[in-house]
Length: 148
Image (cartoon, one colour):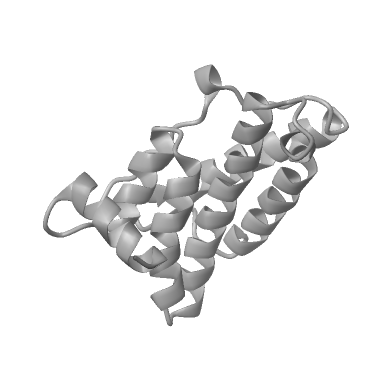
C-alpha cells in the first residue's frame, strides 16, 4: 500500500464515504496528531494548481511539521535526535509565516491572522529561550477552529 492509499484509508475511517482532507487536518491538529495532519493535507497541496491556495496549504503543513518537532522534543527531550528538534521547529515556523504573509486574514474558514500570531508566538518563545526550552506541552497545545 502506497502513502496515498494509506491516507485515503485513514481518512475513510475518520470521515466515512467522502473524506474531507481540509477538515480532517484541523481535527487531527486538535487531537495533537500533527504528523497525520501534515500527511492528510499534503494530498491537497500536491494536487493544488492555484498558487496562493498551494502556499496556504503548504503553510499549514509547515506549521503542523513544526509542532511535530515540538511534540517529539517534549516526549523525548534527552533523545539524541529528538532533543535537537527546537531549531528545526523554528525554521518551519518561519517558512509557514512566509507562506502565510500574503494570505488574507480570513481564508477558507480559518482566522489566518490568529494562526499567524500563534506561529509567531511559538517561534519567538523558542528564540527568546535560545532553543533550550520547549514552549509546547500536551496540556497547553493550541487548538485551531475552522468554519466553512
